[in-house]
Amino acid sequence: MTKLRTAVAALVGAGLVAVAVPSSAQPRDCAKPVTTWVVTDVARSYASTGIQTDWTYEPATEHTLEVDRTATARVDARVSPALASDAEAVLAAAAAASDVPLTRRFRATDHWIIAAYLPQDARHLYRLRLRQETRTFTATKYELAPGTCRYVRQRSGTGEMPRVGDGHLVWDTDRADA
Image 1 (cartoon, rainbow, N blue to C red):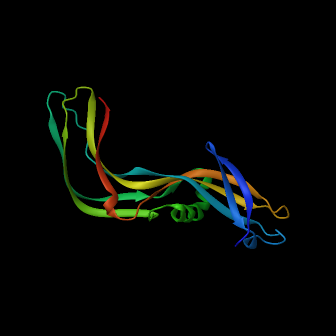
Image 2: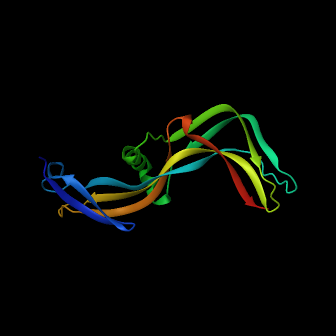
Image 3: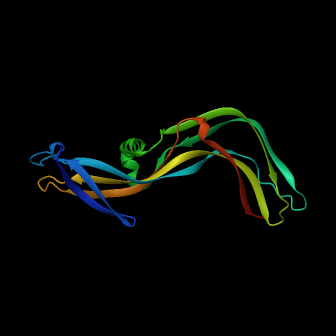
């Protein structure tokens, strides 16, 4: 059985998260800095693909809003400015921590045909939009301090990555005040 040594504990949100590192993976003299990323709060979300209709306003009648065009849906992974310098490492750690396959760049070109029934509503504008399922996350960088053999929190930030495949595209109705 591999002995585990608790390397760091960080308060994340309302809970305590402990990072365990096998003792064999730690440098014996702790002379070299070692960096590790901890990814937490992975959650499903949806990002805009850039495909949407114009806003429509028809207060007097019920009506149908339609899309019939060829276009490319696009979603790119993103990280907060605090993590920008380590974006590649952060995205790799997030992809490994996710329960579904993720990608740095999603593209899908198709001929989109969709129609949605809209209610009579004098107070709102409506539009149809296409969104791709993503995963949002929080990433925290820890570095093993030379000589102390303790992990020190360096910085933390958020990010979002799209799922692999166009089977996770969702059309929905967006509503705004008129």
